Image (cartoon, rainbow, N blue to C red):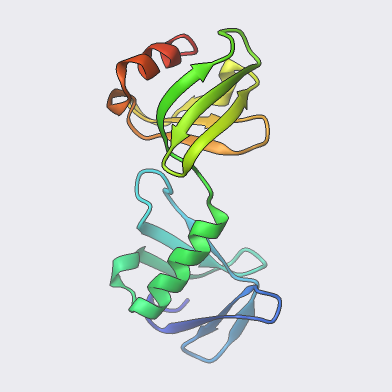
Length: 157
């Protein structure tokens, strides 16, 4: 396994990530995987080969050279689409399935909650909501939501 700074990254003609280790060994179809994508998004990242073997462990993205760090940040952002809910504007019904109108860090969105089981508690203050299309919406801190949003959310918890 390479050290966190003894490698290079590139893309092949198909857009897949290519890892070149310090020994010159090339691995196609490499995937970056977060250990804790919600609680520590800039820490604990493994680069994993197409057959599932860890090639390198990265303690912190900030420790990488700028070129590799930016490359990985872009790759992770394209793979881990998880809008963060900033407010809940409206809920169609307090029975499920229900349609929620939410404001996220990426703009206004509509999600369909199939059942209360699709709301998972990550910690005492964080929730992950899976909509009917498989998109995960993050509420990082329930207490940071406005009072009206918390009241709507309480009906489902």
